[in-house]
Image (tube, rainbow, N blue to C red; front, side):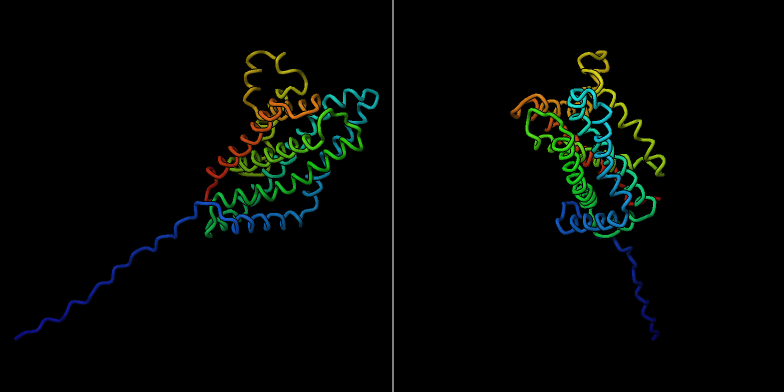
Length: 269
């Protein structure tokens, strides 16, 4: 009688499946990202100075450029009070975010149980905190020290300036996904910011533009930021037009942040 040796059991090796990525926003993850970004910015005083002081310096220079024509400063100062924060926040946010993309920091963070929404919301809250300080400084300087004559409440000016700064933050986060170097991030400014600056109604009324340009300006968020500032400049109470302008600027900022989360890649190389 012959006996056959038992056949050894083969152990199947299955590849470990990565844990599911979190989808919903989480408060602790978002605030941790916000705190990390704020700590990093705290170690860069030049960036802090650019964010907080440049809009104030620009408004100060503009006031004394039109020293002999204070009404000119009153007519364009409120508009620029919203434009300057948008430009500076766009520039700093796009460069700072791209620096973390190219250094691999974002890739390492996204390898952790951290959702894209948590990351984008954390960055938005961090830069939004600086935007609040920036907007408060610029508005206070323009109204109480540079004698910007506004009919409405200065708090409404602050609201529009803050929303403009948040819009600049959202645009900076979004365009950083399409740049591979800091120089390319700066190159997006002529493509994203300058057309809005020319068509927002700062230099001439949008109704006086060519119909094609007027139609384009109707879909650019900076146009509604300038319109909102002008509503505060001319009316004592909050008008329906002002509410509409503010809602559009806020909606555009939220939309761009959502697009930024959608374009965020887990691998940067």
